[in-house]
Image (cartoon, rainbow, N blue to C red; front, side, top):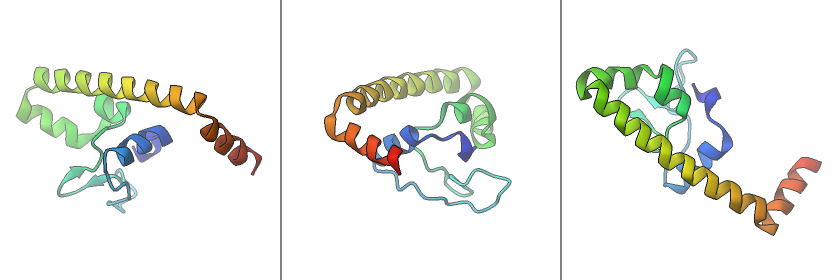
Length: 106
């Protein structure tokens, strides 16, 4: 699942104070899924929330499917709004544009 995490997702979590480092070194599992504490992300990738994360599916049985789906929808809506704000900032801020141009040249 870590492959479904894009740079904006990581940036949002870093802004939220998450120490984004791999915590699980089992190649068959997501590197951001701590076996004891669960997913390290505050803002989770949509792919994990909607489809595959076994940890989340385990919570489904305990929390109730409707409640989990409601919370997932709220989280995804908030994340989308935050992503749109960041995209607007990154596309209009002159210093960000210079960084992207330099990165593209290298």
